[in-house]
Image (tube, rainbow, N blue to C red):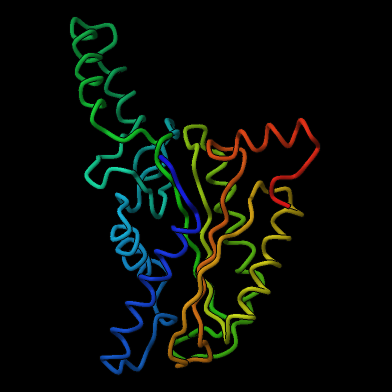
Length: 254
């Protein structure tokens, strides 16, 4: 699939703006920054759907053959070009074919699996997006206050997501998304750049983050929500750029 990461960031920011408008109209005492991270996922998914993508939530990672489905990692949001496409799970497909091996139905099982997979979206053609939400001022036991773990959470969450995405051989397009609640936009942009430099210093293959920011009502000390999308290099979209950089000695992320 073709993917513009700036459009992805903008679509998610638009969805957060719309959700904030609803809270304002309702005069809600709590804002988006009071939501659990997983409660933000359907909001972000709606924005991506409105932008024209197919969105699959909590999709199983496509290369973990050893674990039962209950133990397999799941990705927060997986995007496909076709909004109506079913996302192919290669693990299930491989298991069904292997189940028929050595039997009279081996060829039939393979043919049936090929037919079923023909209309599905291949994981390599989808975009896999992990999301982390961090607030400068966070709620603890229902009470807002400065988040003492803010700096650590900003780095460790995206770092873990990048490692998960890079570790799956069937994923060719991916990004780590950071939803950041801060006092203002300048804090968010400064801190996102700090995160990017830290991830690069740790050797993680990220590209330049795409950023979109919208205001929110200050209910807990945060007056801005900013979406930062860190594309992951070395996968499908970035392979040609990485190959060119190797040839010239340039860094496409710089």
